[in-house]
Structure formats: C-alpha cells, structure tokens
Image 1 (cartoon, rainbow, N blue to C red):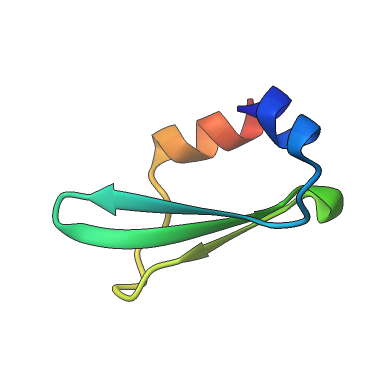
Image 2: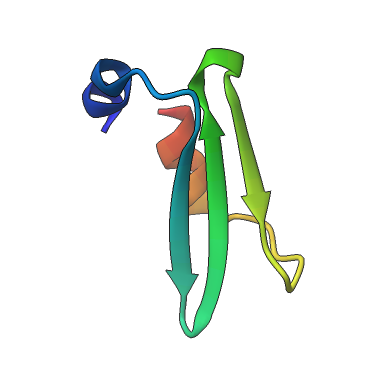
Length: 55
C-alpha cells in the first residue's frame, strides 16, 4: 500500500473501514504525515489499525 500511495502522488486518500455493521472513515494525508479517523459513534481505531499505520 505504501508503494502504491507514493507512486500515485495524490494529496489525500480516503479509506472506508467497516467494523461489524458500523462504517468508519480514515483520511490519510501523507505529505503532512497525518491520519484522521472519523467515527459517528466516537470509537477510536483498533489496536491492529494503529499498528498497521505505525509500521
């Protein structure tokens, strides 16, 4: 995924994520080293997702 993102050259990536029957949205801004997590139920990202983003 990192290779694809660096080769595509986009400024922003939106990644929908489903947890059970609940949709959440991750917005990735690579040039700012920023990830924003949107959840209408105010849930935080799971440990697995945090590890993927940091690795």
